[in-house]
Picture 1: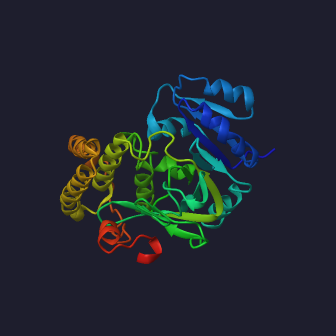
Picture 2: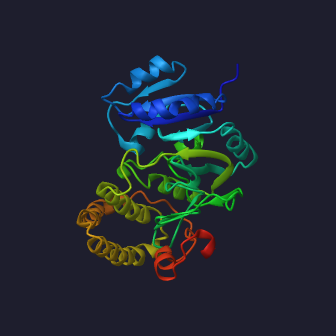
Picture 3: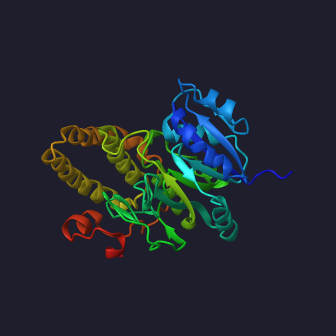
Length: 333
């Protein structure tokens, strides 16, 4: 019997309710894959439940909670399947979801990373916040998606049903060639969680590879199962990690002007949080910047030669959305 070409790896930390709800769809619709649950040292009985109810699922036991970045780095280092599918524990997959992805990898040798269409589990006619129909950056490093600009989420009407190159794929459901994951050194563990997948994709672009959105594969994401969208710690991680990513990957001459611009723009975001009576989020941005300053030297040493110059799709998504009032991706591009 041939070894499956894809490893579906679900990272778990105290997530038995999510595994009970979503693992059955992965098992049912992934006959082409080996399925793994990588456990970040859970203290609940989630792994006992998996072993009792899905003995066909393989367990990878991490020694502690390494977060998203470190957890996957630990879990994937010994896997030999050519394609790795990193799937959140709150993802429901659909019939034949793997086939279009595997066909894309087979047809396009320069494709390193693929994201399926990600819709909202709670409202399946709409795109989901984390990834939607593929991600991009503006010049200042702020991420956005086709189908989701800030908190404006579009209904899926087939408007993004074309297979296209994107800049980043969502960590909620991301496929990557095993060889390239190892060449890139995996995720940056200093990120712990949030935006490490954007950094990974950026580094893949810097090596000349492509990141692709494949709409013929659809998954549904519950979202917010680990940190709710409005949690201050999420704000801290997103702002800190975005700055770290810029220092690692920007063209040399752009680092200082972009970081200075971000000081101003992030300050405006902090004022907005104060006006919205969300002082904890403003404080999270301040903490993010001080944490970033402490990591600048270490992060700068991670830079590699010849980063791509054209990493952004628009100068400022903030300007497009809040000043020009362009609320949908198709209104801008």
